[in-house]
Image: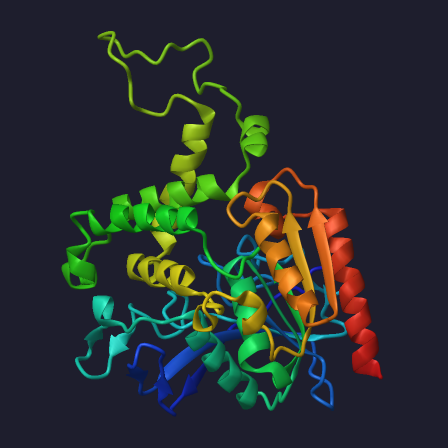
Length: 383
């Protein structure tokens, strides 16, 4: 399968104020977008791909002069790939509050001429979906053939099917959940605490101080990354291998060294350092809060079946056996609630060793499920 090749992002500006669930509003805002494939004459072959916490609009392909900057779902989206850009017009969008070009905490607040920082309003999954609906309007797309996402992106796809039931044909939810467990919220809180306690955080206004709370971001990423991997996967990749074979962890004065000793420590520190270089701390705080608060059943006294009563889409729900962050149990809960309304649901539970990150990786069984599902959508679009 060939790569989609060189792609370029585009910045789209919206002047109509966007009312947010918090009661605040954004008077004007930008969304960074990438598109792949060609929108057909009937505008019926559009697919929206929603991103997870640390991803962006850059779903597939590479940028000119940056051959290593490959889209985060490049193995899924492109010519001949499961989401085939020879058949579908695919839109990747960076969410509000993120740090990859869309309006967020790093953007200038028009009221002050300074970065929003901690003053950027709270955003929710539902706010993102409303902004995405306006993006669809800008492309002249009345109805998406499908909305697809993994993890937090899957929450957005689910929200689309509830908020705009007439504007979505298929909802594809991968490695996701209808709401976070208390354990998940707890992990997010520990990660946020690492950022908030960093002396360089400065109450969220670190831009003015010319610093970045990298120490907190590193720890936040390390915590998060542990939850994305399974115990078996970590054992296979790292085991208890030492960086210095035969080492006993002691320094020259016979004290324990707290430098990197184990391979797994090296891996986590590398991931933390890399993340701290490119991600924004305020964005991390905002997006993890959006994760925490997403719960479409809340307005229905916790009854997920009632929350799904007005959905009309067809669904593909996929989970992975070793994903303990968003366990298959949560996907089955969603499937049951949809079947209670006799919705057409395809459910795949993939026996994969890679934990939550499996939704980003190459797995022939997983990709074949998605490919077959899009084959069906393509037939509908042609009809």
